[in-house]
Image 1: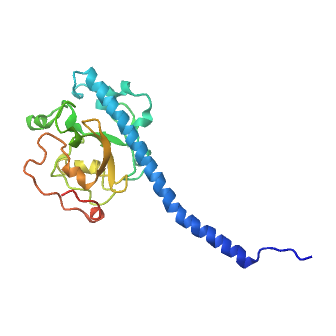
Image 2 (image 1 turned 180 degrees about the vertical axis):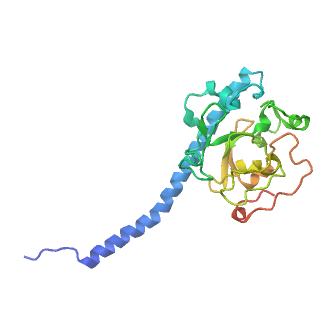
Length: 249
């Protein structure tokens, strides 16, 4: 009696078909994972809108004044949420130098809290900080009760925790991982938000409590402080790695 069995050629054909299907499926699965992390990131930011809403409601409608607060907004916001994972974008959970790499690296607060996170506050929404000058003070939003809230960034994907006060004159990162810098504040602070974590976008929460993705080139078109780009200057010259991203002018 003859027993039927697969030939070697038939087995190779089946294996080749399976490999082809896997090759077609893996990119789709990778995209789905990235999209799921982006959605989870936006959900975190929705909760941060509630955190800052509760804080400002308890403090006369104003954001923190960091003159006398060690750890700044990290300290004063801590009573308003329970899970420290809320500080972390799902695409950036490991600190730089501890398994994380830019632009997918978290920061560590060394100013007293020891907290780890990967979002940052637009410090222009604060009510003040040590050594602030008159010109800087006039740029501050200080409260959520202002017009144009959908264009005023509050809390976003960010590579570093402290001193994030972008200026329109800030240059974009020279390369994708160029987010930690040793330059003066007048030249590099936008780099801290211009991090390619969501395929040409970051996620951000705005003063009207809305949350949405923000194109990396769009960062220069938002209204970070009260006197932002009053002379309608042109956008910066984009580096090669940003050339293919969406333009907003």
